[in-house]
Length: 245
Image 1 (cartoon, rainbow, N blue to C red):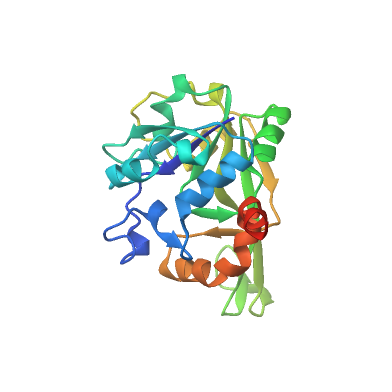
Image 2: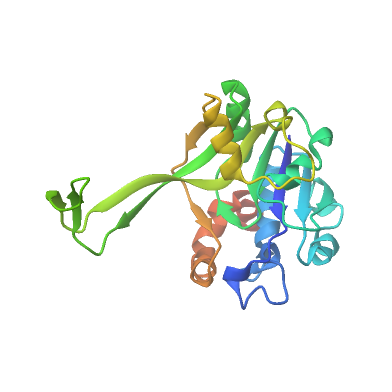
């Protein structure tokens, strides 16, 4: 099994932590960086090889990860000279990828079983499967439903809670789904979804109920560090068992 990890962003929302270090290398707790946690998890979930899509401060990621031997993985790289979107970097190495593969952001902490997720996608026969998560937002205001003209209220809800499913930044893909696109072009996940839906193809949604934290903002990073002692055995159970032995 193979994974493409997107690790080329500038991490501007996470400054000042990312001023001198690329976001995937910021430390969680006092032992691992985000990227190290992900690489160990992929190995433990049955993956054998990884492509790291790097850009901003990519030389630091190359120097840190190397060829992946210490993680039990074969790691190769693709360089992103200019931003290509979420899926654009994958197009550059598409010919080298297996028929089914994982694509994921390099700033995600989760105990999702990546191997089981990819296998479920293969069994579905769909073009793309998105790992999704339930989120809810409570409004701070009373919400009004009005007529199309806007001059009459037809319903009222006092500070309602809106529930929806979001992408976890983890996708299982089939190579043929991306064949229509040209290597080097900018391609975002949103464009891919809209193109598939316009053609009548329905990407799969695999709802996950475990732990998931997208480290995009300083408060997310602070939360990850606060929760590390509690979550380390969940995120890296193999290492927790080894330490206990």
